[in-house]
Amino acid sequence: MKLTLRSRILLLLVPPLVILLGLAGAAGMTVLHLGGRIDAILRENYDSVIAMQVLNEALERIESAFQFALADQEGKARQQLEHN
Image (cartoon, rainbow, N blue to C red):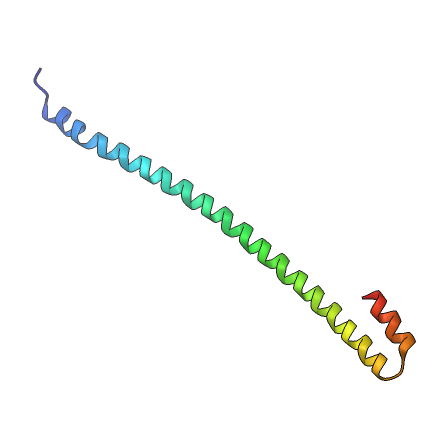
């Protein structure tokens, strides 16, 4: 069986094109997966920052309660300490 020039060129070009398309698909899936993971990491970091701000504010109020205690205002200090 004798192949024409067109057939030979197609037989030479099709396998590399199939491999190239497969690699491009795998790369696209990897990029999509990594993009989703980055989104999750950023969301978790944002939640951590918000939680630390809340803790910092509570700590400041507790410190303020100790300042009231040092200033002989124990009722106000105890109320603020128990609340925070």
